[in-house]
Image 1 (cartoon, rainbow, N blue to C red):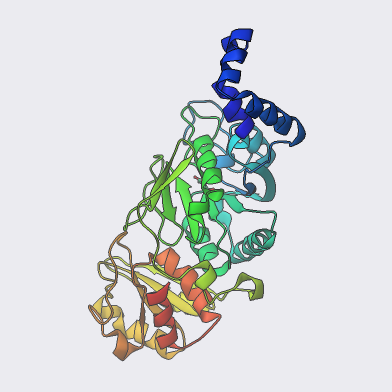
Image 2: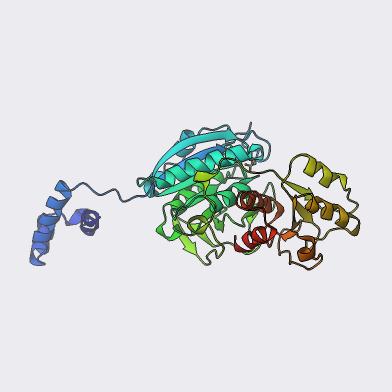
Length: 375
Ligand code: ASP
């Protein structure tokens, strides 16, 4: 660095006798000689962070038939090494290596895959030679995976989940810059201790509440509470920080998890049928996330069904089908009286992840509710 800085002060035209004499007169010759000796003897230190990209598939690894195919393509086609080779600029910001965990579209993620991915990420962040981890992921269930990892991996090293809305073969593909930004973020000291992050469309979001809000368009991800910051030209800029428990401060630990209980979401609408809840119970669900209308509302003709579900030992978690806002306990329904839980601001799919993890710790409604307040 010093060699470079010094050398850059000497314009090529200055390397003539007159310039050298001037340098000597300024007392710089000793510094020049010392600097050159130092440059010759000490190889430049590689201070770039070591980042592992764990690839799982998705559109960011997708390929379409023509460059006009921005929405019709096959996800999960391009191997991670090819993705990395396609962005030589990554070498300017990090020492990057790739691992292919899966090659799937994210709608096909299962609990088993979540556990497998979590365990691999946990092993990577324990390696002192790894400074940060990036996970390339399909955007459909990116919000589930990022929240799950945020809850179960104990580390302060940055873990960044990234996807793209267009395959790399499309015009104005967004994957290259998203991945570059994710690597920058994973290597940033300022990203440490902030939990699992999502890098999409220049935004930095927390994996806790980042959610896919629109499809097709490249500004697909947002949080009701706003972005934490942005990555611009290889630099992370921060404006907020997460306050909920995550990673280091979480009571869930991927290293001790072997399975997750079944949790089912029932989507609220007008004119519902009780059979949906009965089917969920029959399928072995240990909790039902009620994606209710408005403030997690339950139709008057279904209250008895949900009371019966709870009496049978299955937890009822009131969430909302509304993207923003939060469900207020004992408003709309007397949750204390019915022994139900409210999902706070978590959307139904995030509530499903937390309910599953919470049930690995406790079957008590009070404990579940505590976890929904804290995470
Ligand atoms: N269906 C794709 C997936 O989630 C969509 C995407 O990646 O954008 O894998």
